[in-house]
Length: 450
Image 1 (cartoon, helix red, strand yellow):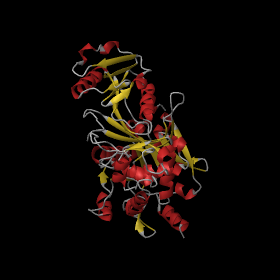
Image 2 (cartoon, one colour):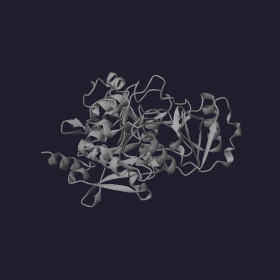
Image 3 (cartoon, rainbow, N blue to C red):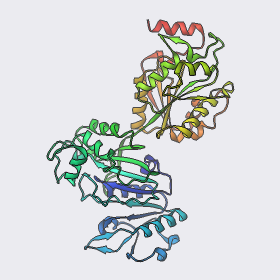
Image 4 (spheres, rainbow, N blue to C red):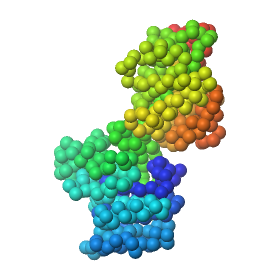
């Protein structure tokens, strides 16, 4: 996958990069990844060397307009900045100039990458009062944090504006910069979140993984920031001589529990209402999802929906999406669950795990392992494999959602597995293959827990 695909950026895009620990490298890696025309610019300043590799440089005076720019004839990679000041520093565009640039670029289908602050080449920074300067029109903001500072002492050689960092995070000068401190900085409204427009996507890149002695610390930061950023990338963005390496992409994963089907061969109750080991199957499923950290979670009901609502309770934190077309097959429940989450879910999610309510041996550990494999392999589909047999539940990345929404009848997610690359998660517990369709199935599952 190319970097812009890992970042979930569509072309053309308008992106601001801020923070510390590899902004320029990231900006260049992203520019090289994009297939269309790209303009590199700044709202603060760039050094002359930072734009030395563009095919065309355009420098605009502080009182000039951008009418001189021939947008049609721009090369693949160009820079548009202010004039040179203080020797080798290119000034940023003014507010009106940046507004004109972003509007024209959108009209002509050109991507714009904005460096929105400076960090003096240090791995971490606390923003000054006047920065970052992020245009309101920006669609995505990438915040960088350099992992090379983790476990180092807090001083001016590791953190730009160390005293402000201390104020934001509570770390004393010369104190240890822990993963928790980095997360506190990036999550702080006056730290990593400062100046980000409300409508912009937030992406955090934990860069310099190759300079961190224990990768677990990077994942610790990511887990602490997961509720703040839509996407968290862990890796090394590389240099002019090396390619970027992405070790993981951490994102929120939703869970859809399919519980709409009838149960004519059982008691007549909806399957989710059947008692199993002391609790209804639907409650067992939502608790499994909760323990695994899935968020958001939705139960898709159909047959016997009133009974399921009674079990979950009107004030239960897990919503119920009613599928009026449940008799037409599982595809209608898949569509109902996805549509419900996309239209009204709180929080962003970029993958979903589909659980079947009548499979009681799905565990939080299994759900977590599916998520972990998706984070590192970045596969569109991740499924358990038990003795060579594909099992449920299955994780589907956002790139598959349009195909899932086209499913018809009794087709489940397996119908699209041939369309996308997928990863298998070897799983030893054969009980995950068991489902409950008949009284004999229920008795067999009960025997498995005795």
